[in-house]
Image (cartoon, rainbow, N blue to C red):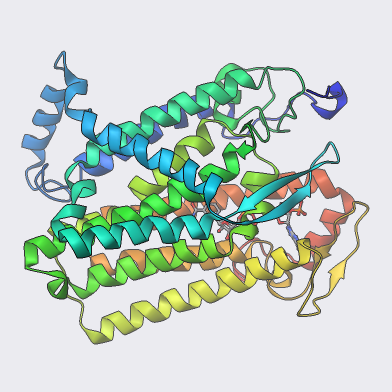
Length: 435
Ligand code: NDP
């Protein structure tokens, strides 16, 4: 392996997430939240939130103080299915056709080559699900609902294994490290990710995790929720409009992300962050099992919305999507050497230029605004009986507010005075004229 000059891997001297205590706290609490969202919002625990809180607290307390507390979280069959699913994603990546795509220039001057066949993997995976439903009935695809906790545990275990693996292998010589995860503090670096692009053979783990075992599984989970509701209501034609709406929104977002897979090569996760517990757990566990909460809720709270409400929610989602896609498209085109809308840009001392008209002239993260509007539209079909199904939009807003600050710091460091100039030209962070 070619040596990497020490100057290319400087020590990280500034902490994010309130340093090691913050990183440790998020590492421990994120899995607990993923479990809590199930145990605090499911039929098994008596509703969302549980109807009888005192009984719920006493049942949770007695479960976690038992010697075999873990037994209720473990499901061998679910673990086997989950690992098979993961293997399917790897095999699909290896065998399905796809163009090679050159990622952005890294600090060592090199560019990674990625195989773009995420959308083909998505079509195969959903095709298998649809074939199962058509030939074996809706009951055959309800296992993701019925074995939820087993699958959640399996994904958490794989996240821990992968995060430990990439942390340990990052100490091998010749690795290009991330600028933000090389402090020397194990808890912090484990969370943030030391190595920039860990790979097994030619499989880049970060790019692989980002869209395949995360987004595609999220879509499959939603399909399973529709099947479970169909079983309970007497067929797919009886599934509620709210459930179809959530499925449609999520599947559209997922299909769109995979169809535009090359856009992922300019996002912060790929270009800047290392692969650590934050990204591994986020992709393998959090996205599929937390983002599908609304669909899971609608299995046991079967709400009909009616045409007017459906139309309004569609409109909210449409506005969010338009902002999200056009903003990301403008930047992605620009970073890949194209500028079809002839947008104005400013030169910087670095090789890359910054857009100053179009969406990136209105705010410094217009794409986040679109994403949050969509997140709201995905929660609205669950009605207003519980705040829990709005967890996604609240959490996501906090994540993006924090992410904007992180990216701002990163750009300030990267562009120096040019970034100051840009922030004067584009003073709003996310919402034009407001924030
Ligand atoms: P962004 O796509 O917002 O990219 C930020 C980078 O863009 C900066 O670091 C900078 O990189 C470049 N940039 C900044 N300003 C300009 C400009 N004026 N002109 C050209 N380039 C500019 O990063 P994210 O990775 O945060 O977000 C990508 C998408 O993913 C967003 O839509 C976001 O909402 C979504 N997302 C979704 C999540 C989910 O869980 N669903 C989680 C996180 C993000 P440089 O100059 O170095 O190229």
